[in-house]
Amino acid sequence: MCARRFLSVIVFLTLLVVAASFAIYQWGSNVLVRQATPDGHFEASAAGDEPDYTKPAGWLARPGLPDNPSLWLPRGAAAPLASGEAAVFYVHPTTYLDRAQWNGPIETDAATSLRTKLIVQSQASAFALAGDVWAPRYRQAAYAAFLLNNRDAARALDFAYRDIAKAFDQFLREAGQRPIVLAGHSQGALHLLRLLGERRNELNGRLVAGYVVGWPVSTIADLPTLPVPACRSPDESNCLLSWLTFAEPANPNLILDEWKTGRGPSGKPHRAEDLLCVNPLTGTRGGSAPPAANPGTIVPTASLQSGTLVTGQVGASCKDGLLIVDGAMPSLGSLVLPGNNYHVYDITLFWSAIRQDAVRRLAAWQAR
Image 1: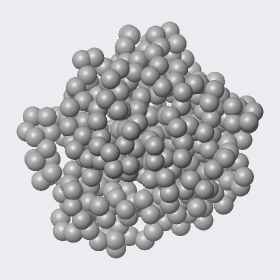
Image 2: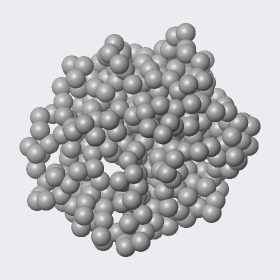
Image 3: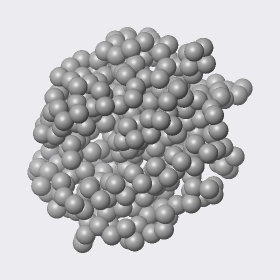
Image 4: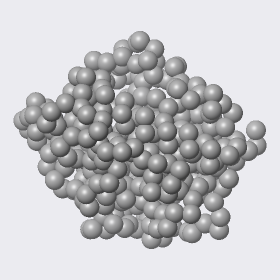
């Protein structure tokens, strides 16, 4: 399983997980594997009943849902008069951090529920101007599934994906014939890559764009097997965007060393020089933009439950397959990972730019 170390250093909105990521660097991944591996083997029944996506309870966000987190706005963001005509299918990253079982249940503890809500709030909201957002609850794989190459880990990931596939079926029924935006981060991005490959018929002619963020994508080993190319221009539709955010000096070795041992669906090996980087500030593959070109970065509050939009502070350039940020970086708290890895902020650093990008690509799709 490729990119295991990548997701082993993912930090979610808790200092506890940040401390764990430092432990990986200090003591090695073997310690984390022992600490993260669930007791016993994978059991589907341990994750509980599957979600019912015909009911509102199966969704974190969807049209008509009370207190819909995808409709949240940071302070300083203009409230839209109306959303676009697209239907957005968004899949959140791993928020289940327990080792009790291989897949998290739908009904989670208070801490996991809060983490999930805050992530959906800060990420899915970037796409809500393009259209209504559907964000499914799913029995996500525990983070140990990305550290191990064994039958339990593979079954946990497949199990999580089956929920996503069923949610997508219901999403298609409810979305009708509207154009589609796909968006996901980290584990969510991994599941969307598989969905893109398996559901190309349903997406044919309807995909505005796929935002597969925070997961390595090879332009040689992965991209040719997908039904859409990488986005080359900001006004192109039916294309894919992906990026991994770092600051200089960037040290992605812990991510890429393991990823490079794997192969993509094409059978070709993963290589660092083949990483896809589409700059969210320019909407172009391999693009570069100064801080002044950034229309809005979310700066979180101390509690992480809200944030303020600041403009013109963070620039970004694609360099050696990574998205390298620069400028007068705002105070983001203590969630920047070792190696100057800004994984937690892959979307919030460019929130307004992504918001504009999705609307612009929707207009391009409509013009076709």
